[in-house]
Image (tube, helix red, strand yellow):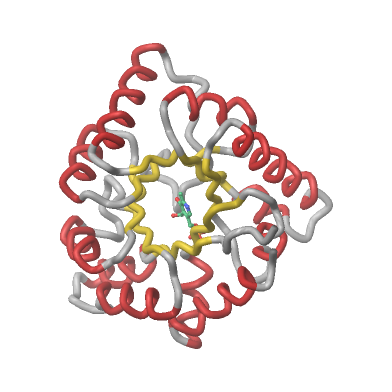
Length: 247
Ligand code: PXP
């Protein structure tokens, strides 16, 4: 049986980064949404960071008004939960956030949550779910994080592919790929929908697409980097051709 095509979420943070660097009205993020969707992106992903280093509140609202399907990445804070409830994205991916980091460096540390923090997490996932927002947790590919995600009430997880991306073309590449394969298989077996993302590009994506049970890949940095030379549409088409050629 042929599996469904893996969905592509295009992360626009790096376009917003250029806009924020000069506080200009360009590059226009709504144009980016339009081009990405026309090229075949299944959804638009943005991360409103607490330090507002790229996407701004108004950008998020305007993107919400134009994107067909929006995946909103955010830290687990009261401010962001409230923002998500007014934004009403289709999906909300909860990620860890540290001010000093260049990008999201690892998955959520769920195992060290104390009882109270776990209850708050559960309550917020429930509130978001009841508002019609599907919640995904960005976690490292290991069984413990997957079990905890399920316990907290998430319907989806996004496996952090950063270790695999960093180990690509090294002796540890296949171990990192195997971690993702085992994790996707286990998560699927307990009823979770499995997304992946971080550090994926035209070179390392093929093997990820061959992993069974992957629902969606989220890609930002490599697409926007390629777009600098050949345009956003071309950069997305290149990624889609890899996705489409794997089954
Ligand atoms: N998924 C999540 C949850 C992320 O935090 C990021 C980085 O913002 C990505 C995917 C995309 O990573 P990259 O920009 O390396 O493609």
